[in-house]
Amino acid sequence: MRKTRSLLAAGLACLVLPLAVPPADASTPMDKRLSFTCPFPLIGKQKLDVEVKASFEVPSAPGGTFTTADLTVAVTVPDKSTRGLALVGAASIEGTASAGVTLANGSLTLPLALPLTVAKTAVPASGAFTTQATGSVPPVRLPNAGRTTLTIGDFSTRLTPKKADGSFTGLGSFTSDCTLDPGQDPVLLSFDLGTSSHDYGVTGSTTLKALGATAPLTGSFTGFSPAFDRTRAEFKVLGFVPGTADLQFSPDGPQTGEPAGDGFVAHAKLALALPQVTLFGLPVADAGCRASAPIPVDLKTGSGFAPASGGPLSGEYPIPPLTGCGAFTAYLSSLLQGPGNTFALTLTAR
Image (tube, rainbow, N blue to C red):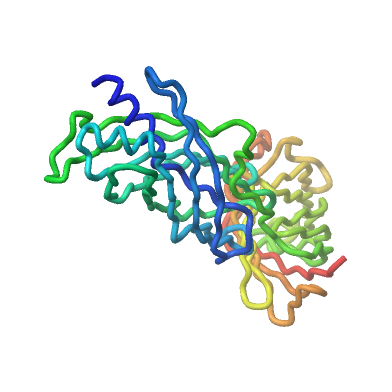
């Protein structure tokens, strides 16, 4: 009886496999074949061929959602396993699985547990038969531009053969773990998540509301990521004390966004450093003076923007309290921090 159970387990343990989405355009039906091997007592390793079909939606830009639909996994159960099922009186087979894949999107690495369900399938007296499993990948927001991959991993199945009257066979329910056969590409989906086909130069200004000052800005804008050159704002405290503040805005972490009409919205997160601040021409801040937290700003293209040539881009942002400025940190914070600061920019395609 132990040998019969092992033969049966060998044929059934691989009935469920994880999603295998091949590279393709969005909303396209897909079809891919893979093989997995499951080790079992007495009979050693068993291999089953699997056909996976699915359709999926790939976002056109960072910030969009990756979704999968119509996932079906068809496994051909060989005659050896069918005969093993017959020996224990099994008339049907059903079960579940927990499959592991890894989604990598730029700096994001996200393990996904994919639940799959093996539909109740009639077992013939002999010969091969096919069982179907269904499931889906949960929708995932992809925040980063660049190469995005979905890679297959190991999976575990929990299967239950039953008699014609619905009662359990001598096998009960059993769990088995399977691995992808070597020589197969584990990357099931790979694509470049676009940002923009254009690289822009930047000119414009930023207005610091609390200081009542404006500083010119130059730099570049690639994808959804701005890169500004160091600039200087000139201001007066109490209407007569002259001062200057050097400003350096730089990206802080992933920069995301999405298309909007003929343009886009960039969800920027910027670090702000103030490497030099003066009053009456004398330095009053240490070189490490900076904003104490990243600055979020939504930069939106305006009327007249065209991807091929560029156009206006603007946004409003807060300045958090400063840190690292030395003895005058609290005072300088009171001069700069607060909401209502703005970017008014022009993008020019390069």
